Length: 134
Picture 1 (cartoon, rainbow, N blue to C red):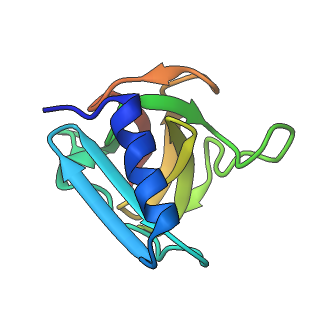
Picture 2 (cartoon, rainbow, N blue to C red):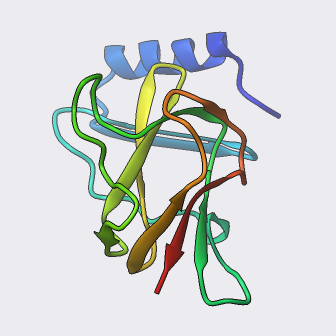
């Protein structure tokens, strides 16, 4: 069962009124992680977020539905460009879901060979975002 905007708003209101420092809610197709008073540790991508192809290149797939952003703010430099070297913990983009910004790590070491989507484009769960060569 998917959560509606009202469900998420109610969860956030309850957290705001509580003394919780952290809450994680996961359902099929939706993940919400709220951390009060600090930066979260870099998250690992979902196991299906990085897929290898026959030529050895890896594809970073979107772990969620949302809006894809190449930089942390308008006018800021992109996290990565074609030719950028990345490590598994390197942030490659942000996906915005319901006004929450989710940093997406590469999940694999290599070089960005292709950026598959345009900045500010809506992406689907499982849609290829980047191709990375070893």
